[in-house]
Length: 417
Image 1 (tube, rainbow, N blue to C red):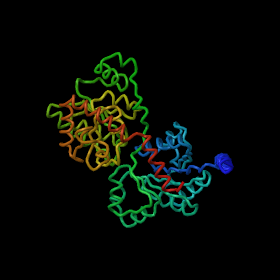
Image 2 (cartoon, rainbow, N blue to C red):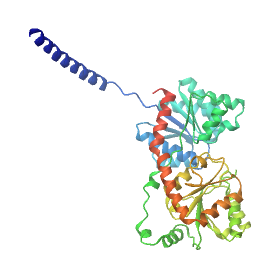
Image 3 (cartoon, rainbow, N blue to C red):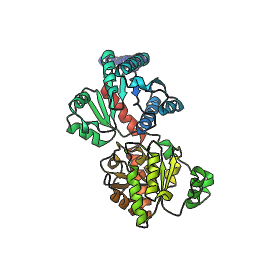
Image 4 (tube, rainbow, N blue to C red):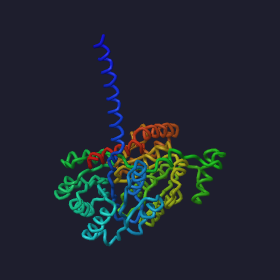
């Protein structure tokens, strides 16, 4: 009996001791500093315009900031991107374009910025001498350098490029083709991942039509929207849109879309085309529209922030680009339940399930693009159903929440934080 009483007392004492020890450990751990989030410096590339890369970086940074990071930017002074950062209250330093183009000056500026903001990671977004400048700073300050590949650099890599890619701490590809090309070319950077681009999804997912349009039927609301917003008197035709800047290098290939529209008009299948975007190529594109006698069907909207409404009031979306790393606009269209038409050998097949959520045409083939547009014109009910499928597919695979978690995991692998 005595042994039993002693045993019970021992058990109770041990339990109390264990509980006190556990509580002590918890209190001790709570006073330890949390592992700091890596500080990221984003280098924006030397352009005066807002591009897909800029949209990507702004929205990635806003999401990182919500998760406790303090991202910082180094941007071209007085650029449009600087104005966007100011509008989004994201912190930045500027570099004159002349200094950006001088590797020694750029290295010095990056070094100073990293020192002032205690950067752990330098994130480069363009394949130029900024990578070499970033690596020079990283060696001096024991930082990591990552590269977000928007253009599948490995596909055109020479020996020097291959060596540079291998020396990076991480490469992030914005479509699966980039990652597979890196593997095929035996690029062995320590961390390689595919993460689709970030964008401001809330303005599409939470889009609400204003009351004045809701009181009208769709056709009446559409007519009113285009007349009031852009001064366009609509014809009674299907309406399609293309959202893309008008670059001199013909990357977006507006000319191909114009050729396709020319074919459709001569087949008595006219459509009205809304072109959102602007750039140096616009005067030549206006001349081409006149030359092809499609001017009355093609409307140049210029830069506009009314993209959700534009997509809502069009029947479907086309992107004729010959080079496109991903194509955020395809996802934007999908979030508005609109079908997209995109090209092979671009990022479009990573987004569009051909024949289910949209259509894929042969890259740089005007006849095939015209066929795809004609199919959607001839099958409006199917076009509507495919739009709903596009929405479900995009929501499941391209939400910002899933992407930012993948980005954090990527950073963790790169930095060890």
